[in-house]
Image 1 (cartoon, helix red, strand yellow):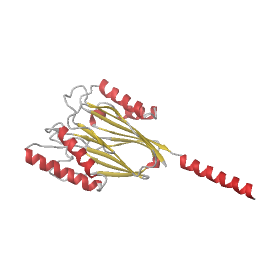
Image 2: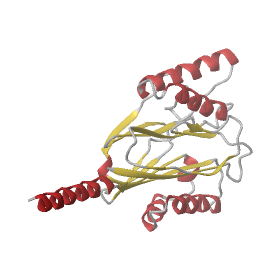
Image 3: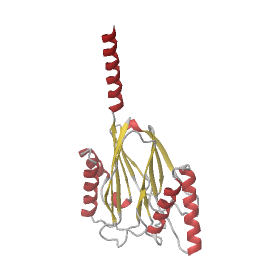
Image 4: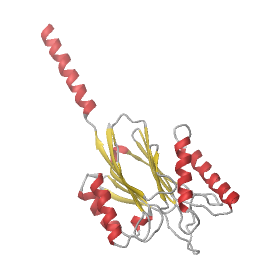
Length: 256
């Protein structure tokens, strides 16, 4: 059994006038027009059945990136508890294409999503918003190449070509910490520095604050979204079983 501790920061950055990132976390997301969020956290115990953490980075090279990332969160909030995520992602892609056609604009967004279902961690990743994992004491970065020859992200939701979902699955018991972020963090802070910060502390607020400060100090050229997760073993159920067994033994000794 496990507890999940999380902390979230969404920052507009220094050079951007608007925030085009959005996040969806177990029913919570930002409005279309927002200036980010200074903190948001839950401490979730092992009674959960399914959790979801996601970052959507509206593509700045297209129009209304904040609208695209908001549409993703809005559709997830309506459908996630009742439909398979793969189906939802297809519906999001089709919706973005329809809105683009109806409103004569081009919409697109990345998607980096973590689902925790029992002892499984399922990763869905579309585009260049990285996911970092401390996995069996190893530091893993999951991200795809961010630009093609035309300097436009080749794989994203809202793409007229079929998007590619880079899906991976891990065992929850093998994972220590996870960072989901937009490239506003990864382009300002090196992988080595992110790894060092992850290993400095188990406090998810400290990790988010430290990463954000590093990104801002290095320029803060883009919106910065950070979700930090810490997986902790929960021994309460095991302890309760031991207490019950001791009580049964005591009763047995008294009776006999």
